[in-house]
Image (cartoon, rainbow, N blue to C red):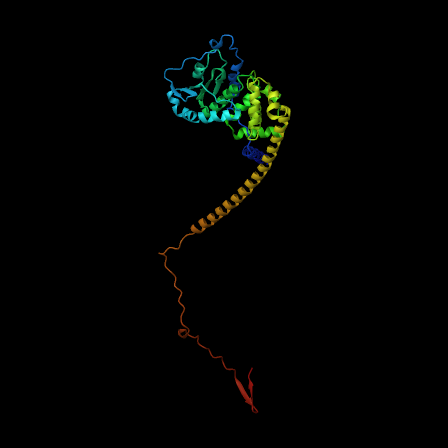
Length: 381
């Protein structure tokens, strides 16, 4: 009984997560185990380049065996074995660039270099000397207009397209605000949201958060996403991505662009949000929390309806299968009865006609002696 209830509960959570995603949840999150490294990679903006300039952060040379594809505003450097996996990145680069420019309301990116390594070891040789680095699916250096991606993380292949979109979003946001320092929740949230790495597990994680407790504030998210942490909170990344998705919704995109313009001028996040959205950040957080609660309620209702429908359909299918199994069993039993052999002698029953029948003989009864006396007959005893 307990096992059955556990299975039903797990199925309910899965259905609720699916309903959440279909309701337009923006829960996109970076690849497992890579968020901490990517946060470190984005911290190259904290490197003091004024002391030593590019002598401190220098791009190492590209291996002579690498291929090069020039897309005008972006250049790809990759090993010949990666040609097929790099092709989709080249094809979608222009579209992603235009979309980022539209969201941020700033000039499109230009003069970007993408280096693609076969694995973590080669990735280290392609990253700038003197820059923070740890193996990951992707790492970007906005001031150098450089990103380094890895085809594999050990024996597992990375989602190259997701890493490319994520790091391109980091670089576009940094370019839009002219390199000014931004809160971690905005950087991680924007990059993760734009990467479109939305999976059911991420939706489930955010749904469970909303059902069990309140969402974190932006200040709490910044603490959870601090670059000094060994591994940032996966839930915090999901929250940040969803909050950014709320801020750049179709009805708020122009306001987000205004806020980005204020950040470019050097304003803080509070002042930029006040100018762009006409309210303070705390009020927007509460509105976002209310929107999450509404979506969680709808997802729960849809999950109940979906689970009930699935149980009804499952029960009908089980009954149908049982009936079919019984029908097949009866048919098999009938087919298994022994057939009458044609070689066996047949028994003929012949009915004769009535006129040919022989009547049994009639045996006359013995006569009883009688005597006559005075004109009357008497039986002798």
